[in-house]
Length: 359
Image 1 (cartoon, rainbow, N blue to C red):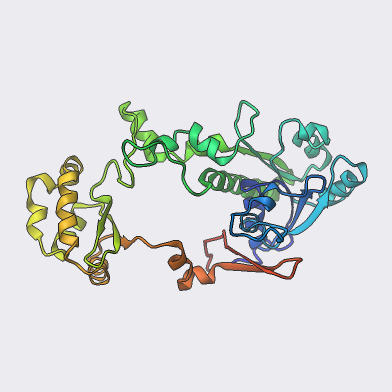
Image 2: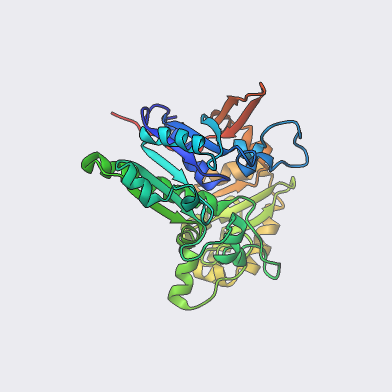
């Protein structure tokens, strides 16, 4: 963990839900002082109440809230009250970064429009997250997954479009804003001037389409649902069951890896068949390939075959459930704990996943 890397930096967070608070937690993990200001009138960040059926109604905040609100100094203010706006102004006097995701009209209502704030605090870096670039709408992650085309390519062929089970676009927008704020801080070191850094969920979603958007832009072919299969590589995303009924995913990216796969499975001749000889051949004949692989894996114990595949440098993995994942050693190292006001310990995964080493 790089817990002291940004020690001395002061961040004010006026953002709610996931994307904005994820940016605030990123800075908190790196040692910045993060003051999260929540709406006193409405009971705070809406995610405090986003509880599953298994969570206690007595707890003041949900597990969802905890995921991006670690190590922040929480203050409840009502920006409709002049005394509370003065308190916010006092915080902004010494702040380096302000994170906002105001609803339409709120910035003007509370005299917190970014251009006005930058005039008032010339060295302040203001990070804004919007739903859309050209229109003001309530824009939760699921809306953007639908609007950006992401849902249309997720799911099995013939199924209804499927939302990803993680607020993926919120996370991507948070990463975009982190990068922009860090760049603005770097520029401020030279100029002394603040800046307004903005992104939107929609723009971030479009940027994340990567190879799927490139496929359409270069071929005019609209990508469709393929389940976990990769449109350009085979066997990549194919799932098979081992002899002991363990689900295994294959991610074979080269012809050499495919030959090694066949060797491990005891059928080297498969890689020499004309319909499986190259990746292009395998993509065209992946249904036949799936049938072959299903039969071969049904004769293999999962632990044994995976060990052999890893030794042969063949990308493959057991499809693990979340409880198994979060109980492995690295995941445990990444858990951040915090004592809550009610005396309970809350937990969440660290969002900073990089290391910097000096020689």
